[in-house]
Length: 372
Image (cartoon, rainbow, N blue to C red; front, side, top):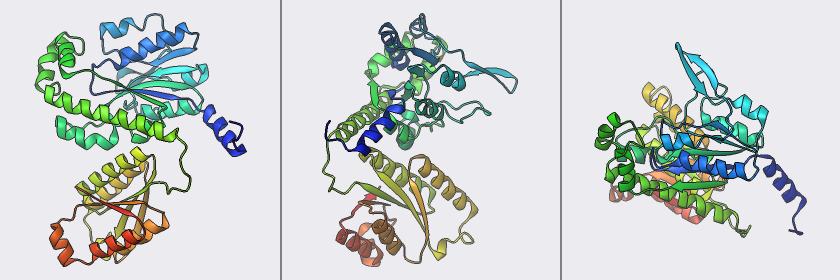
């Protein structure tokens, strides 16, 4: 401790001023995230911590609702929207009351239009910036970079999503785990949804095979978070190059989405900076590519930025040269590209581009990942 440099002390002080974030993750609704949060709230309250409930969604589950008794609750903000009275987290009240800890459930929730922030996770960032600790919860299917995997498992594309950067911001991530049988039993007992919704749920989302795959995703996510925490708390050799990723995309919407999400996962794992590079060749000038491709390209840039990337748009005749130039300039350690449309033998025979890229990256000690 006595060897700390002044700038290290300053960094510690700056970090202390911001609140700590704890997130409970579950594979689906009904695993008991909110129940565990409220149990923790009672423990903190008994230990003299100034804790408030900012927003909790009980979903009319009796066991969960019963745990609210005795906890100090900040009244919700009432909003009229399209003729209906709705309730939201009262962000200003939380900031004014300034408890030590506040509970803010349903991290992926979309706020009512006209609210200060579009998303509840943005409200949480404001609260953390004010120096208040937050305990929150989210289901695995709401995490942005694994949205595509979740869609393949469940057949449903989840619209409300949380950027991976929020999980990276968390000081602690806890998995609430149940077996598929335990979760289905809870559903049949009416502990998750009303009785009339049970049969429909069993036919769709609550199937053992789907639950098992979602459970695997949740376990992997939390294991990755724990590994990152261990890595960040172990002194590293400063002479080692920090990991930096470069995702190379084209105007092909589906491929670009996949490359962005997979690179985001890698960057999240290594807690590293990453970039998304789009090389606009003369063939892909805005006058020559269709409007829908232009629109998808802009959406992909937006998505990449939300996932924490820095977007690079470069005009060049030679894609390989542009990738090499940007990789060296940004001190990139790993380049991620999509699988070529031709099979690998045809690529090697027909194109010098791939060989040139591979040779130059190897010379500069840069790894190349071809994403499926």
